[in-house]
Image (tube, rainbow over all chains, first blue to last red; front, top):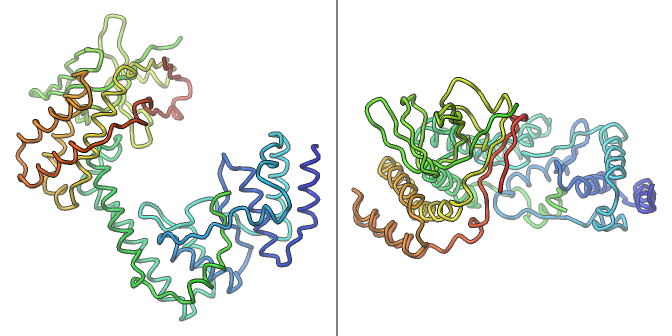
Length: 224
Length: 195
């Protein structure tokens, strides 16, 4: 095993972060950096009911992600471990695989026992959103403070799905199976654009907390 | 044993009674029974022909660039085929046609597309038909495309917008070096050969 791997393992073992959230995110950052060309993990959620902070962070992410306000924390956690992506990339394939399984084990079976979301973490006009599904499973989602926001998100998702139905109506279902025509692609882009413009207006939802405070709570890793 | 197939572009489609006269980029022409398959100019397809040049199978590509059979009884891709990419000579022309269509439709709004869907699909078809069959430069093609659009049955204001969009269309430099995508995940015994 290379010296770099030993170094990373030691750092991971010591996990020089103060809170548990930070430690989990450090592991996830490393996971994302290693599996850059594969399925990149996006967010880690510990098992059971989430804390208010985690819940609000995820809710605010869903509210803001389509407004180009995504905060990319990127290398913050990696640099906290005193390693660089260059060092990670220099590991051999076998070592990377070994490290990945170590992190998976820690997050999914160790103290974390949580769930890693790999994709569909944003509301998009095309597909269902797993994170919104997760939000609704949380007891805290029944709080009056959040109900209207969750309804807005559901409406936003519903309108996105209606767009797909609209597209199928104009360019029939059968035709969608084919490699689409340029016209149907253009039409699809227009629908998406309308959807985004509509939901990017801040008047469409009430921001529950100060925006800066919200953004600082985002614990997501977009890209390393 | 491997079957031999070709990846080609449809350059002409003509509906005649219950038949479709179809032409590919290497001048192969066939007349087949219209079975409802959406054959359109510019669509990439995989074609299998017998040694006597008889058309045996046609595959079109779906939204994920995966081939699916629209003509013929025997699934040669499933049995294992070598697909030779014969679109290389037309990559430039295909990129030009794509660029014209993208630019033309980008200036339209939702309602305009819905109201004029059939005319616009026809324009797309005509553009691909003309551009793929005539190996002439980007600027000259713009003139021909605009001439064709002037003659279609659309509102003058819409036509003017489309013509302007094509006039100012930039050269699609990236697409000029890009070969056609094809996804053979469902046909693991078949391979594509590019040259």
